[in-house]
Image (cartoon, rainbow, N blue to C red; front, side, top):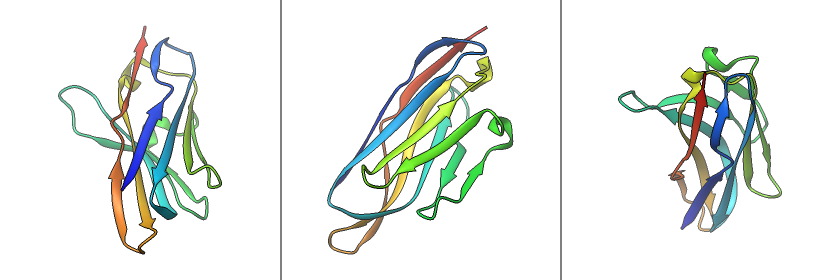
Length: 120
């Protein structure tokens, strides 16, 4: 079993910054692609950014130039540096990981999320 635990969310004023972390633990052999998603009340879950094991990154157009995704493979940890935050960035941010287990099965896991609230 694999657990993903997010941290770093909070309340911030527009223009401020936050850094989210997602720590993966459990029966992990290797983690392939990791990603951040977000979901605001009444809206569909959307992909914010993703990063492959080879550190190729992709970003939603709405966060390009403001957010930076990174990972520490030695610590099985994913990060999201969020700068120039806007009220429309307010959402629950969830971590996702494609994990190869110690038994060589590949499964997709989600964290519980961390809330980010940006006030104007």
